[in-house]
Image 1 (cartoon, helix red, strand yellow):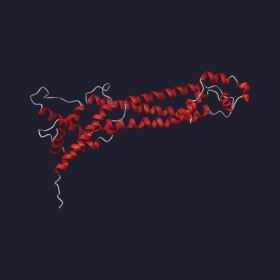
Image 2: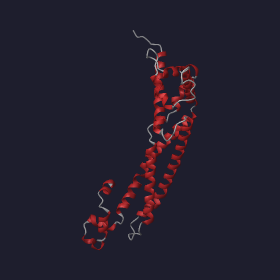
Image 3: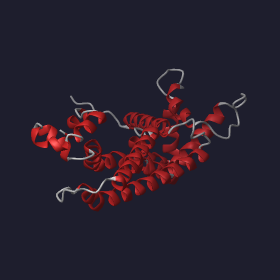
Image 4: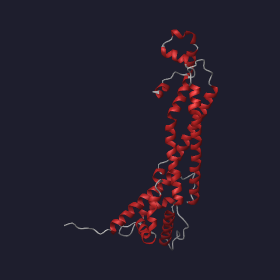
Length: 272
């Protein structure tokens, strides 16, 4: 209803013309009387809409920040995932022995998703199968790493650019509200509680929520920057979404490959 009301609002010039008809109040139609009595109607409606939607905006932003933050922490703390990377590098260097790619000190994280593309001569086994089986034999704890990266999937759906835009929009709306309250003319109607309601029940609480979101967002960006140093990539070129999408895809591929190995090891039971 409020959306439609704002959308159908007359232009500012027409509202100003309407305000000049205050002395002819009794001769005006009811909608026009409303426009005469309620000053700065457009600004009030925008502020009220912002207030009504504020919690929804917070709930759209906060979970994404929490997911990326948790995913960054999980990747940093997972020793099993770190071991898997070491095993992958070791096997890769062994396979590339004698070539120009031998003796590599590391690899791009996106390379993990390409492990399934390297196949055996019979095309039945991939390099990812071999790595998973090697971990089973030598480093069985590594097989637990998918359960240690539980927030990676959610983080892979987060757009850092959208987060920044949403926070910037919230900041602008708060700034506009502050200016509106500061510049709002004193009301001659004792029932006009606009400034009081906005100041007491919303303005300070909204600013506090926004400040907390900004602190959480700064912490999230700091953790992602630490990951970029650890995995040697440029965070300006590799986005949060891209990084965790690669990681999530690999996580899923590893689980599928490991499940195939388990299925191969389980003896088949024949029913007669």
